[in-house]
Image 1: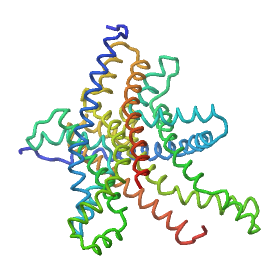
Image 2: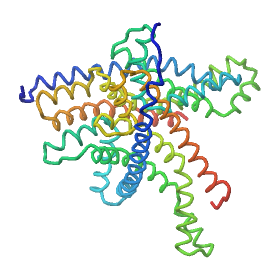
Image 3: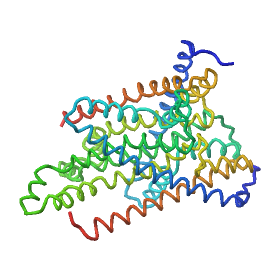
Image 4: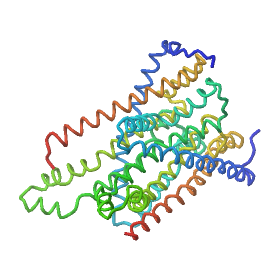
Length: 223
Length: 216
């Protein structure tokens, strides 16, 4: 092997990498927030008494979960303009990612809602709690505790999945690797550095989620 | 030259879909073998082996598959190993799959109650007999549904290999979309093809899950 690894060739691009991290985190948080709202409505639709509503929700969830994110993004970004809907890359990425994660989030939320048995609500009421107290301490808190680990790992999966939107030209972290590669021709160094950056990000995010779990659910057990 | 989308193009997409399936099968077999090693390293009572397995799983599951694909695609030639998109894709997907298989199978093995080991010992069975006729049959049964469920993920993951230029279903759709300028129809067709493959796998997973529950 006679290749000289030159990671210091990447040093002038620190600013780009930091900007990329910012865009990646922004994409991840924004998508997660929108996906949770979509997911809640879809979860309620899937449990509703209305057959048609249940059917539509099921088609959405199955359609999304059985096709790749990349193809979904291509349909939103390259496909929709042919029916007159033109989106810029960032907006297309947010919409595509949110529609994708919304389907997964709905399944997690559905499991959380179904984990609360009606008898527990009756028990809360029988103990003299108000409707609001019952909802907060008997329904909401235990439900969130039950789905917290699943949501946390969904968040990490999303953080990694945002790398795919680099193919639409969104200037997030992975796109910076493509950019640095095109400037320096140091492909291996650029992609390795960016991949390690993702590893650091996911480890930090996981540690943060564990800390929040400990603070909220372990230190002061209420449920 | 912009041309119409014809029956030949659908055949072209279906032929490309064969590569999607082939890649998924290779990653399943190679990733499965490596995943078995990971699962074993993860549970043997030898701490350094556990640490290696945990580190491996954390690195693979904590980095984007896209990054892994690019590292193998650009990295291996630097070590004198000439690879094309096909080899890099197969290698990256196999390694990625091995971490997920390793975790699934470790979970399955550990979900068999330790009392089963004790019960086997009380009946005078040897370690090997306990493993092969008490623990493994139960663990395999538990692992079937999540394993088939993960295969679905693997099929979807192969789409990312389009970005290093491997011509499978997604890359073929990109090419066809550029030639016909009908992106909505072409990507729609690709989505349907993925749906057919993945939905069959998820139904299979559901049925296997039902059957394993009935067996108890």
